[in-house]
Length: 284
Length: 284
Image 1 (cartoon, rainbow over the protein chains, first blue to last red):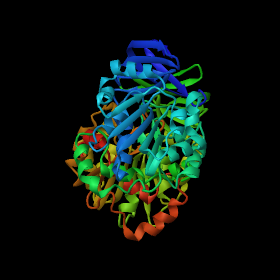
Image 2 (image 1 turned 180 degrees about the vertical axis):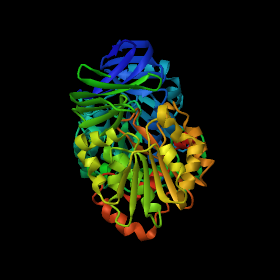
Image 3 (image 1 turned 120 degrees about the vertical axis):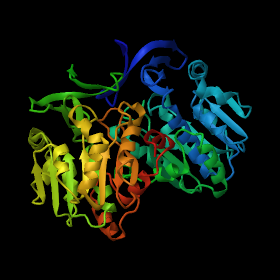
Image 4 (image 1 turned 135 degrees about the vertical axis):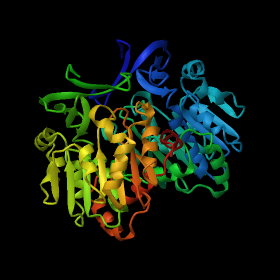
């Protein structure tokens, strides 16, 4: 994984690789759930690795975190309660804390060590965790979601790839539990992998979502540290379509977008106009 | 470059790398201008390398070639003559040949060996080169463009990175020559690198374009084999904006889009709704 001052990740049946030159290994531990490393790279700042897979870099974390939070928020009509499953780096929480009318932000992260390590090496990500609306819950997302009914307005699945203990986060059963946990106008967001190297069967993931939600849409945003970079995301909704930004939120979204690094409403609307390739691979 | 059955390309001051596992080296030669290699990969089919840099893969060539050709064609009102500078693989030519009203397609490729090698290893790309409207001109694009005035409706700069003999294709002087060679409603398209690792000063490239053209816009499309994948492209125009698709072409574009792998008009319009990051890096 780390050799000759390079971190390297092989993916897609070990046929493709990406790597970054590193200055220093800042942290290494084996938590109860996974190996956690932080390396300092030349090109993209600090980089968090879980079981040798890239998770967050200082250089590009804003893309993932902004699109995951602000797209569903802009569409929602009355968002009071948000749940994030995974996402122990805190980046998605930080973005939700920009919206004053949200009352409760629950972060269910099974591995509390990810949060502690992120606090030390990614302080810009974790800054929102001290907001008094935030509850950090050291639980298994799969079990937690089953106990909630008609409760959250937005649920974010901030997961790793559909393998090992994250595989349950891509099943029809799980999406059904999420649907139950959402209020009547609820929205679920999730990452749905890179369609250029379709190792995990993206179309099946979307079919699972479509079997549960009446509205399923997809967009892409570049994840510079994820294998192959071209990344798709799912928007699953009970009532409103992804491009139907709530008119009463436009002024607020316009205002906060001035301080955002990626998101703006024009990009949001354009992103859901997907290519033929994107349609084919998702089956949408 | 090739080691242990892997092709690997280091970029951005040797701080980032991408690689693909290879089955076989199919071709290697030193032409008058550059080293030309073709490798057969596990994940992305045949891959063309010029001086060790990834140029074209069978797996994803459709993205670059379709967006370069169909975006300006859909916007143009009366496109009769097209010039492609570089692009010896023939992919952009192939896409333009889908439009029956185009009368002349000139391909100025300085290195004829790229064309010959592409014919052998990328036959799907070069299929358009036998179209009777196509003229292959073994010339230096920089000199060729100076001789043309008010002649082409669309000019495509299908170049490598702004270094070595391609650096002249990113200067204000060159853009001025292109402007002169274009008709009064002409459009120039070019690739403008990856803003996440801004080795070449993307903002300066866009300023050079803006100093010459009244309309300069930008979009991105994933180039899975280029360093960092997230790729920006420039649309420089004398009269029409990129999202102003010609109403009389909509039926035709809709029809051909059914057979295209990437392009459709909705994607075209959405792609120019760019993120804050994209705006900042291009200065647009």
